[in-house]
Image (cartoon, rainbow, N blue to C red; front, top):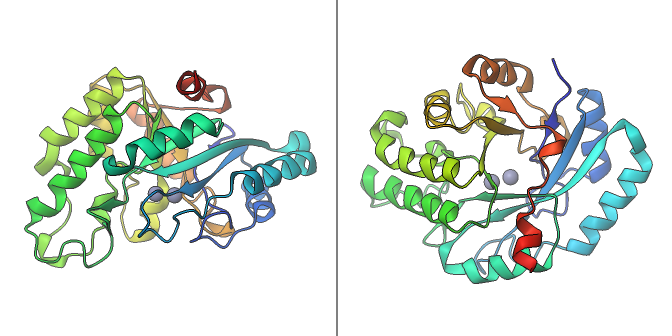
Length: 268
Ligand SMILES: [Zn+2]
Ligand SMILES: [Zn+2]
């Protein structure tokens, strides 16, 4: 197996993670990774526990320190996972134009100020009322042009609501296809996030049907991320998922994909 990058993980610079930078680096070495990108959260909604938690200078100090400590044994890229909400798009744009990262991942976590995996989110909603706004917000995120990497595309499939039944991508294929077309047209790249495997799914985010559609629409590359919030989740399921991606004909990006000059364009 080629040496891989884990492009999505959280350190104690995220309010919901327990891993120190050093522990993440040690795990990466143990799993034989070529490099990592620690993507601590940047959240803009005041109701989000992560709001104003991101400390860019402290994060960069850890990156510098670990680059010195691990040297050529591990490539460490700088990154961030931005919670996209259309309502805060101006704040997000300002943040990205004033903070430099190698890698910027956009993710939808909240709809109407409620975390979509919170059991409260689907309360009083039909299945369509729960799913539709998530696809709309994901489309808006892609159309904002702020992100070259799109995080855990079908995250909503982990919504806790028994009576909706199992998530079936076919049921939402028109919405999904529209978003994927925009991703491909804008040269953005889908993330394949293996954290779904620890939430009782047999497939990553997004699942194989969606990845097949992405490929059919002209998508060629993906980035791989574990979304580890603790050291022992780093590179979770990478071997199996990488093998399946290869069978689908999708190429996993390595460090040379960082970055397209998106952030410097924003800054000018
Ligand atoms: Zn996320
Ligand atoms: Zn994450």
